[in-house]
Image (cartoon, rainbow, N blue to C red; front, side, top):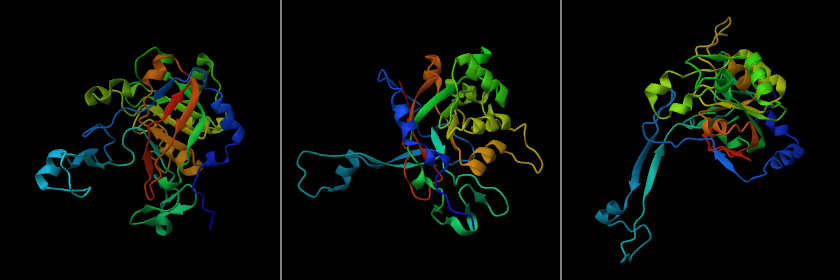
Length: 296
């Protein structure tokens, strides 16, 4: 049996690289890399809908005579609380190692498989409770700007040669331990689902994934719900509908970020920054909603 591993290669990031990343902050300015979530928001069709439902309201407390603090309450004190019912892959999020499986044994990175490591409450290997914090150098690569357009058309692939050309044109170098974010322009139209549909599922192809691996990144993200281009031009034989997820997440433990909002840093031509992200540690979850920061 192979050794169980709960965290990807970011686990080996040297402490001095964290210190180097911290030194990138010169102005104290920060950019949120997430859009607000809301009931009925556009999502990948394979995920459940995002819902916010009231659980307690001030009128309901009064009408029901509820005394959560104990009596007396002579000032009309009330409060609001809610259920948030959603997949962990709603809006800006990180895919945990246990998110994607492959093969007859349904295995994933780190030695997990469904026969041994999947409970009624989620996976116990590579689940969200083991997601690491990210505090490292971030790089934005902007294919639409490089092409002189607002957004890539739907299902448009971005390959290794183009990513290298973009990095050269932007004057940035991709280094080991980086988080590389690739803009397609999809979220420029958020939350107009009809307009977004004209630009959905563009993204990196298999050559781009191999290029990122060669560069030594620990995570990579896009502004789409699928990260990679779909339908894939690299299906192969036997056919694999998501070869990029397979190459990066399943085979190499490179974390994938999806629905990352990149419009503001692209507008301001912020191509290098301190990338900060703290996933929620939830046992059994296969990912985490996040609100990453780009800091200057």
